[in-house]
Length: 180
Image 1 (cartoon, rainbow, N blue to C red):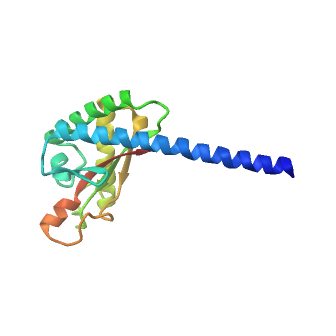
Image 2 (image 1 turned 90 degrees about the vertical axis):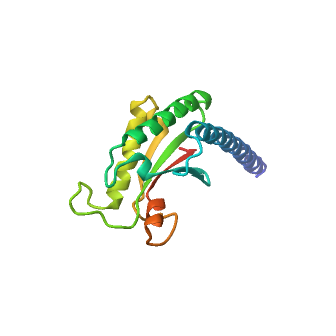
Image 3 (image 1 turned 180 degrees about the vertical axis):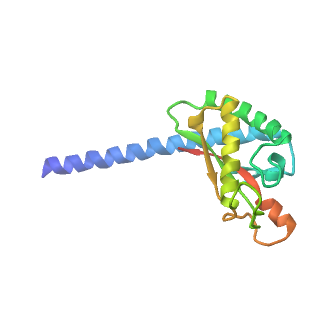
């Protein structure tokens, strides 16, 4: 019984130490996230169509893509080149033992797509746009292990409503530096 109690005490102590170590890693990643977003703000400038919302960097879709398309336009490639440079710099700064990714989330508005395009619905379009951004970043030298693409379609709007302005704000690509 004494050995059992000692074992339980050791397990509890190991659990506490593990929690402290994990909390330190999360805090370290938060510091890199803050530095990264600060650097992105410098690089991208003060544009109304690119902004920070909470812990995410938000690009309005019109900055990156023609309507209904998943192919980056010229302005989008320019912005993604800046992002790729910042990510490559970040990859060199974050220690390899910190498991991190940049999650690229595609979002659309709630209007149905016209039936003539190659995408059956907004979900497919949002996923294809996120994948397009990830592929472009990989082509520019960002490590694929540090990128994730997700499509949310119209199911995570920033705002509710059916005005053109609200639809435009809901069409976006969000970037979030997070744990893997």
